[in-house]
Image (cartoon, rainbow, N blue to C red; front, side, top):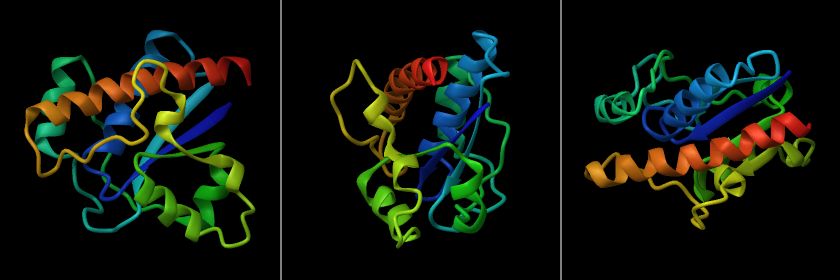
Length: 156
């Protein structure tokens, strides 16, 4: 089984969206024997909190459920536990890379949008201080990239 971790800053908007989208795809395609996922933040601002209410509202309109609470990326266990660590933007990518100074896990750490096929963006925008259109764009980008993750998991 392949284990995927989505990583953003606070683990209340983007990374829980990626987790919710991929979990639904795993369920819909009956791939729970092949793939699992979680999410985390590089900062501990929101540990133990539910995802942002706007994130949940926009996601639920598309049929996604948000079932986990915010947690912080833990380099002592997460580098080993996960096969793929997907950062939602360059800043968090750099933050995760700094936690692996010997580059032991470099092949596992990627930008989520490397798996996208429909959207050319390299980063998923942070919707926290934005309007509804950005929350919808986050969902669009996550759906696109998660389809790529399913393809990766099936051929791995």
